Length: 256
Image (tube, rainbow, N blue to C red):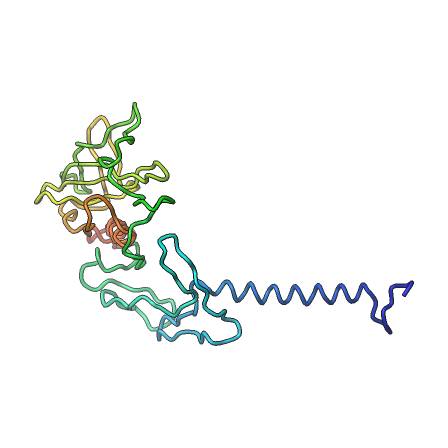
């Protein structure tokens, strides 16, 4: 074995190379199975038929322990129900959908959202992450910044919709996430995503162009006055996003 030959034409170099190739093929197979834990099996968007999950490419379900103490098993074959508030414009795969009925709540286009868990997002200490500033004595608006509370909320039509009554912050990241609006029509309180709000400090206005003043009453409600669930966040943000296209009839029309 002084020349490295083990038997016949099989030497140490060939043996190591073969072992490496076998390991690499096995690694690729393992990774391609593991990446199917989320988003699989695939679904045909025209028929709703699922890719067969029993093939060799699909891993066996694994139990995932969540911080809340609940267990989730992945992969699974759960699918969100097909909404009756939309319809396909054509029969081929990938064809777009258009809303049926009220486009602001149809969950189509910019107003689409995922059915996340109807529980609050939590911090590492298992506290609700996004809460109003009134519940956090140590939080306040930075000195020198405009204080939004008390500002008039102006819709895309230039009319007042209500008043900013509080600021909802992400206590884990110390960031503003929502403004709480007390509506002039009935006094109901709704949330407005920070990213859709343009604060005008000198004018004491919070302008939200995606909604008309009369549309704020349709903002999806959050059940608790001091916390918001992930599903509620999805629906609230989707409503404001839908307004960018469906807020007025002219927004959905071609520009030229």
